[in-house]
Image (cartoon, rainbow, N blue to C red):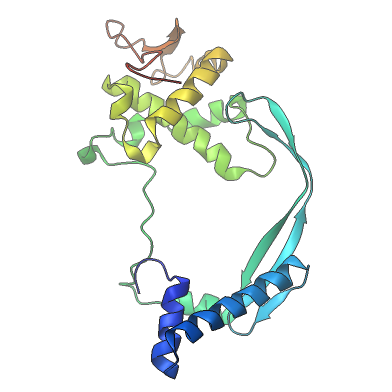
Length: 234
């Protein structure tokens, strides 16, 4: 089955296989799910043979950063749900046919034929290693947040090196409005000044920040990344 399996799909299968009334099938599913939710909410572990186990976990308070202002904020304690698949479940997924069609996730980069520069022309691992520690940290253990910093920088490099307007940013880098808002916050915090200094000896990263514009020093006659998109409204 492709796409998303929904509650109504399970009810329909019950109806077809057990010859149940449609309303009864839906009520059965609703009742089962309610019992599962109530058990987990009350702190009980829920185990389903050959499927997996659900249990709740209290996440301790921790420090993070406000995504808009980058100011440190304290996140309160909260309860989260953790699912651990059974061995049979993992084996079934691992043994799925090679032609299995799962959910298609967007690639973080496009090939040159799709309008983006080749990967080597964006941000190399060596350049990123110099910049990573200077980027605002999303919080302890937030590995995905750190990778988003790299994708954000690659989005800016794509815009600068292709002389493209903000609205032409490929979707694989995220919504251009979101990227622009983050760019403005980093500019006001002088983060790019430190990033460019860290890579000053790298011939592939010769940039400077001037009046809110990122300018490629290899193309000094180009206007660089505009500080404000045309028609942008906060």
